[in-house]
Length: 246
Image (tube, rainbow, N blue to C red):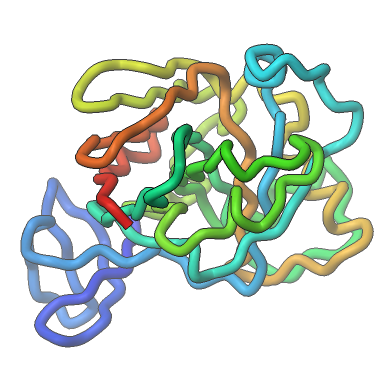
């Protein structure tokens, strides 16, 4: 099942997808173009991974990390499908990052890897833009790199975990103005989703609705005002985003 949060006729609704249409809780059917898309989740905590693909680390001339490089993001960074992301006026390099997102389904503390999938509700797609001008250290991304309003589109759907046979073997692709610019696979993650859940839950409680952005493969390129960026993960969905001037 694919689930979404949308605004329609002045109200916020939960909806499910059915053959290209959205079914609201009250049974009404609407088209995808009739609604305003919201982030499909409202997390308490947003965890994000840096350099979780060896090829991406290599293209940035860094060694692959031996321990997860985790940082936190604020909820105001999130926007929905078809949203507008503001590029800072003084930025010279702003690149997308197509990422598989694991959505936590229940409270998790001291979870073992073998049990980790029991704590997942589903999966979605994020595009975690980075403003490289502001980067101080790839191992400690500062706030202005990864915590800017509108710079993390997410969605459109949360796909139930039961509908994804193997989240660690999904194709990742990004298109800029319909041109394929990034292609990879979640099988190339350094730290898998079960590993990350065990690692994080060993020192912090994960709550229902929390999300883990799992990093991006190589192929991130600069984007400009007016670019349409589509981040796509096999079986999860296509997230459309447009860059505008700040």
